[in-house]
Length: 321
Image 1 (cartoon, one colour):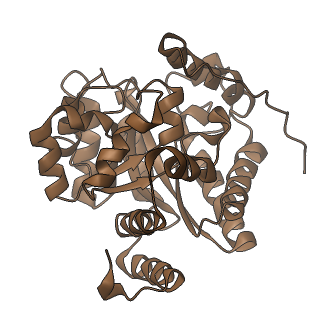
Image 2: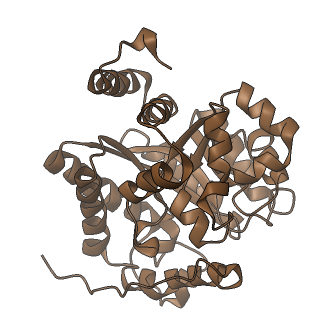
Image 3: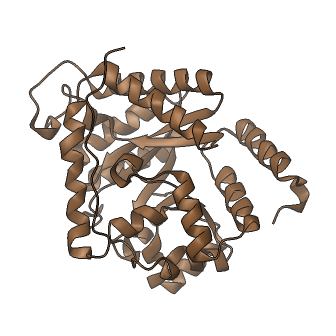
């Protein structure tokens, strides 16, 4: 197998919020190395599964933008690349192949979520069509990521794509309330019909909305390490919004967020929650069960996943938290 060019790692100043957001431009510095590279894309997907298996994960949903890795049949071609011959459609196929090879090699289950990008609404309908095409080959949902100030009123292409996703039974999650206000979360659940919310920290700024989502058991995808490094939350972990989620018995999960960029892994997020946020073993069990219940697997596979967790935790399903 051809060696992949080494990628430099970066250290980030998490104490200075004015410096924390700009580090996200580091994406520009390594993504261009794999755009259009079939072997690299498939290998990255395979090695992602390998990494998750080493972390003790038994099921994972990975998300990415197929358009960001393509160099043809995408307008504009991202990262100022010249036109090549790798389309978003083939990117999804390659990622699926890599994930499936990883599943067979490491005996865990891996599925993917395709991302729309807020600044590129013209891509969104294409994304949902790819979700439809590959829904039986490992793609389980659609996501919307990027600048939360770009709402669906100004960029209706996202709303139309999500309407199509609802019509076709495609699962839906949306990055919302990470750095944007609670109104972005409200738009995600009311307009885009999101079944899960990525991050969702700012939901706490609208207590009526928060209480409603608690009652509806809306699932929040929480990323502690990420939220500190990006400046999304107070750098003092003892003040993190997930502590409120924990105390309120909310439906949420702990996740990594771009492990390469943040030089992190799932163990670091869990150990941080234990060390600084007062998380107990029972709470970790509870949130892992919440994660499984809110995953985007078909019902029969979800039941199998839950059974494995209950068995591992020595719990009967009827005695869940």
